[in-house]
Image (cartoon, rainbow, N blue to C red; front, top):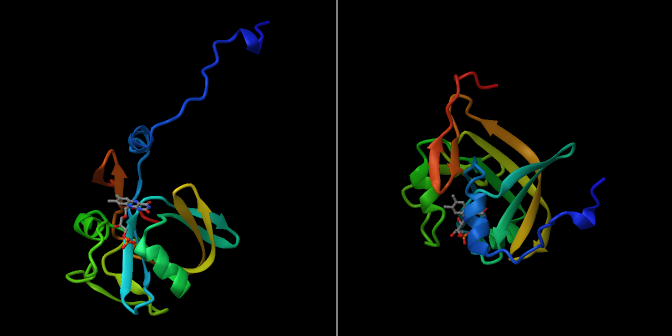
Length: 176
Ligand SMILES: Cc1cc2nc3c(=O)[nH]c(=O)nc-3n(C[C@H](O)[C@H](O)[C@H](O)COP(=O)(O)O)c2cc1C
């Protein structure tokens, strides 16, 4: 029998952030915009793809923010946030909220939701969360929120982000 010592096992190597980013481009995911209220009383929002469900019972979501995100600071101060899953056709919204402009909400249709959180119109799903925990990890902070409300627009299709492209998610229309 072959011993592990006889196998040509590859050594761990330092992985360049650019190579890692490109490789993660091969992992398709949803495009979200997360909104909250900033300490200055202005709405804040950022485009994020590093967002997943964490737990079903209790229902929790997890989002990974760059340390320098203004929206992260807003969530820390406000304590609640709204995760929007963008629909195909909302590419311009995704691009707008991936910038740093102070007036990102200008020209975007939005209103206050039941918790007075800034809710952008035309999204597939909006999940309201109460901040549970923030954990610093590497160059990002993991934000964990407890889900306190969900609104779905079943007729819309989400968009999928892969290889730096925002693509339509095609299905037979039988949303559940
Ligand atoms: C498709 C896409 C996905 C992104 N995903 C993330 C992410 O998961 N986490 C993150 O911190 N920034 C992500 N960004 C970058 C932020 O949107 C960007 O840094 C933004 O300017 C943050 O805004 P803020 O500082 O107002 O919060 C993404 C950008 C794009 C276009």
